[in-house]
Length: 462
Image 1 (tube, rainbow, N blue to C red):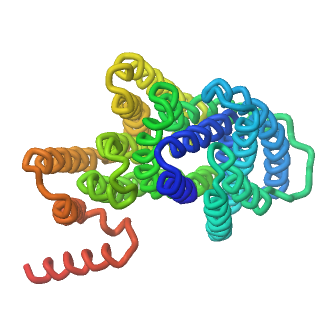
Image 2: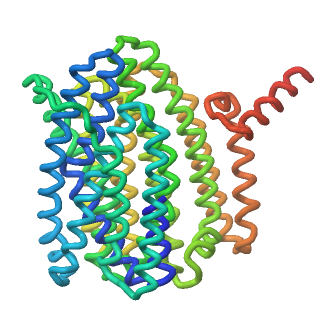
């Protein structure tokens, strides 16, 4: 939520152009961090959890020792790369690029430390430090805006928040000798994951950079408004992935293949239930959401928002399958990385074809096209490899998507007032929950409990 709140403060208080510059700088730093540190965090999440599951303290210390050394070097290199990268994109001053470099290094540490937290099973501690860092970062940003700071200097408070998180989560276990075979395995896993991570996680950041390079700061601000409004919903799926990945690694490490398969199956079903409900409602409330969040100055964002939501839905649904395939074997990881690279290539080709004519709308369409590739392929592969019974789930998913598309088109054709968006979204939500009633047990919460009780009463009545 720190990213969203940062963009909201900048967009509301400094305008479209300032938002476009700041968000493009954030995307640049985030993309560079994907070159090693972010994947290093994923490796920490997997291998620390695996060592814990096997009860191997020596391997636990060896993994922590190897990864923290690698990530420290990589964070320094990422900071150096950020300077020429920003000068090339923005054609600005060296001082502006230095702030981007500071952000890139801080985010690198944050991404790694987050993986350490989750790999160590310290989810509550990770959340607490996330909240504390976000609070301090936002206070610092508000002060900076009030003092009249603009441009990439606004990244300083955010970088400070990430550094605080890094200090809290950085592994302090004893340094031990790393077995050569384990070191090679870790390095190979990270190197293999880098291309896939850049092409998947970094795809949206690249889209933001393309919007800045092709349309300038003002149009990039419009795209950024839609992007940062759409992406918080994906945190639901991302958080599940961070929790699921260590759980799958532990199950695999113990040789419990039945538990592994069941966790993957339940995660996918839960993702379909929750993400279609949340993202479908957001699409149907596009006009209302964008006006409430950004005001009347970001009208162009409403055209981009539903396209980005559709892309985020596809990639979110793939998280369970990607985590399962990544845990199984390196060969399966090659498949997910290859799908991500193919998606990026497809997206880039669409950008080359239509961005000159359609601007930021073309950027969003390219992102959607690529997301369809890198999202669908892992789902199909895990469906086949894991022998899952997902036919009815996928059919229900398609019907739900069709309902949203028809309702969205109907809102525009009938020119319904903005206030009706809530009613339309609520009707869809009720319909979708009724369609998904068999999977409600997978999702905790008062609403799901109430619906389960209602279903039980109907059974007893009949």
